Structures are given as structure tokens and as C-alpha cells.
Length: 351
Ligand SMILES: Nc1nc2c(ncn2[C@@H]2O[C@H](COP(=O)(O)OP(=O)(O)OP(=O)(O)O)[C@@H](O)[C@H]2O)c(=O)[nH]1
Ligand SMILES: [Mg+2]
Ligand SMILES: [Zn+2]
Image (cartoon, rainbow, N blue to C red; front, side, top):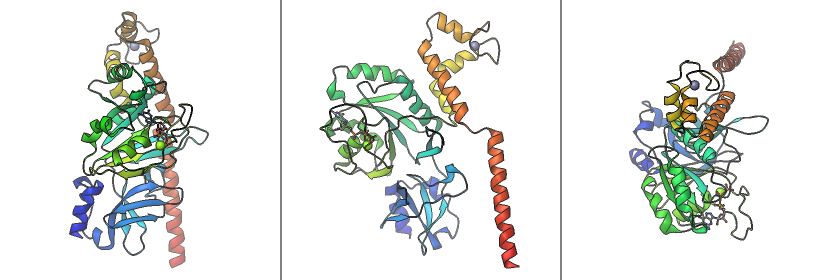
């Protein structure tokens, strides 16, 4: 068992997770990592373990569902999930469409590769969304600009991206070429986990394959005539790299609906937030109020109107998508009632 635990480091296990184990935890169960999520179950992995188990949910809410990158304790005799370990980081989004379900993207990620291409896919508003997602989860973002081989303006795209956040790292690559991809190696060492996010067709799976050195992830055929994504990747999955890291490939997103990301948005727009502190009124809406520091900065060109517009849009969207405290309480009450009902029923059966 001891050797088993030390081998777990290859899968990303560390002190953060072992500190959550209690005495006796490992007599009946062992830790495994979720490699992929399918409709029918979870692919789990650990030293000598690689199999499918039933989906696992730690509590009655969407955030407690096991997702890619999660660590689970599974029962040694039944093989079923027993406990979901606390996460070091979690990426989630509010799905588009009528249900607007909460969707978990990946857990326990060290670095987020925000992938976009040096073409019409490049969009500052979209990149800022992903940066807010990364900042909210306290995960380092790296902007990866693919298809640098198809343009003469790769440096222009990189310059624009660099300006989105102070100190932001931006790499331009040909995702098919191991030499240009080598610049990403520092984030992909032993036990490190990197999640790739970005629109469909930008080359996430191509990058996974180049870094893995094998065709482990399905990519769109090279014969296609347009540059639009086709949603080739349909499931989220971890891929092992020869250098010992893990890449979480995800399906391209049509829309990244931010939720619970106030802190992340504040970080990405820290310059605007700092200015707003100087408005005369604490509840300034930054529209027609006298003494508005944002309007002043816009008037003298210190702030770009488009950037302020993007900031407003993200705040409004996050507020819409984030469950209010009252809503959260109502849900907990409903859950409590359900548990009580089950307990009552159990007692009735025993008596
Ligand atoms: N020339 C060039 N082609 C690339 C590059 N990256 C990806 N491609 C091509 O772009 C197409 C789409 O790549 P994928 O890796 O399938 O894209 P994806 O981001 O995984 O897309 P989804 O799975 O749909 O989200 C493929 O035909 C790749 O060969 C690049 O850097 N340069
Ligand atoms: Mg893909
Ligand atoms: Zn103001």
C-alpha cells in the first residue's frame, strides 16, 4: 500500500490530498483519479488500475459530481466510489440553452492553456472570459495561439493577447509541430495537470497528440475546407505525456457562461475596479453620475470603451448565472427535508 501511495504522485497526487485521509481510510478503500467522464460512468486510474465505474455524486448538487481530474476513494470490495476528495481547483460553467445547467469542466488542474488561433477565432472578450475562469480557480493561465504557421501576423495576435492581463504568458505555436510546441513543456512535468479550453477547431486535440507523441485524441481530418470547428472532441479526458504530465482535453465550447466568478472578473479588470473606487458615489453606475472616475478615464483616453463594455457584460452575466444566497438556502432546505424523510422511512422499517 505504501508503494501504491508513492506511485500516485505520477497521477498528480500530493500532500493536499493525502492530508484529507483519515486513519483507517486506506484499509477498505483506495484513491483513484477520474480520467474521463462518459455518459455511462467514470474512467478511473491509479497504479495498476484502469477501469470504468458508475458515476459518483458526493451530495445532492451539481458541483458534487465527480469530474475529470477528481480524486475519489473507491471501495476495495465493491469497486464503487465512496468519497470525493476536496478539490484544489475547479473549472465550471453555466451551460447555454434552456436548462442552463452547471457544467463541471475539470478539477485539480495546475495550469489552464487557453487555446485560440491566429485567425478570426481570436477574440479579446472570449480570452478575458477564460482568464477570469482561471483567476477565479486560482490556476495559472497561459494563452496558446495556434496556427501561427498560417499567418504572417502571429506576433500581432500575441501582442494583443499579452496586453489582456499584466504578466500574462502567451505562446504562439503550430500545434502539429513538436519543435514549436516544446515551449509548453515547463507546465507539463511529472504529476502536473493542464486543462485545455477554447473554441472548436482551434487545435486542442492536435496539441495533445503532438505533446503525447501519439494519436491519443481524435482530431478533425486535415482535408476539411473551412476553418470552423466541428466539435470533434465529445468527452473530457486526461491524456498522459511522456514527460509525466497530464493534459485534460475538452470539447470546444460555443459559449463559456461565467458563474460564481466575481473574484476572477475583478482580477482580470483590476485597472477598471481600481478606477471605480475613485467615483464620488459608492454605488456609481458609471453612466451619468457626476464625479464618475470611469467616465473621466474614458473621456481622456486612459480607458478603452470596448474594454469597459466587456467588463460590464461579464459582471451582468455572472450575476445572472450565480445562484443567490436565498436560492442556495432554499435548495439546502429542500435537501435537508429529503434526508429527514429518508431517515424517518428507515426508522419506520427498522421498528
Ligand atoms: N496549420 C495548422 N493546423 C492546425 C493547427 N492546430 C490545429 N490544426 C488543424 O485544425 C483542425 C482542428 O484541430 P483539432 O485539434 O481537432 O481542434 P480541437 O480544438 O480539438 O476541436 P474540438 O475537438 O472540436 O473542440 C485539424 O485539421 C488540425 O490539423 C496549427 O497550429 N496549424
Ligand atoms: Mg478536440
Ligand atoms: Zn463611476
